[in-house]
Length: 158
Image 1 (cartoon, rainbow, N blue to C red):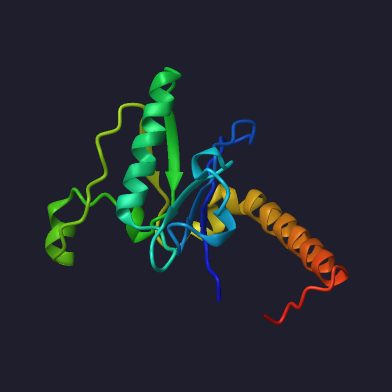
Image 2 (cartoon, one colour):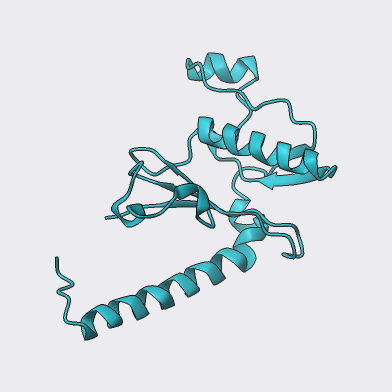
């Protein structure tokens, strides 16, 4: 019943890939016990349900905007229409939701384009192969890990 959320970001050709954002349930997971989290090949954040939240998304966007500002590059970022990604700056959204959510910051080097509702599965570029490839590689490595543990006599039921 473990869950993680992984956000991938790359340019259209896949030649420029950013460090994935991984959201887990635990702030300090046991698997990171002897690791410096900032040295991981991912950006790690945590919340109780391992879901993307608006505050985490805004933090990631600010980081991304600063990164591209230092490179003196402007980008167009295609994102799905998940609630955590929506611009909460609009008054109608704030009235409708009745919540004081964090707002999408003013970005200098990123232009956000939201994919239309109900089209994400068809239009989302990352679903076209990158996420599929990642899942396949993850499953392969996980199976290798289980086989190594089985060969060494570790009980997997626990």
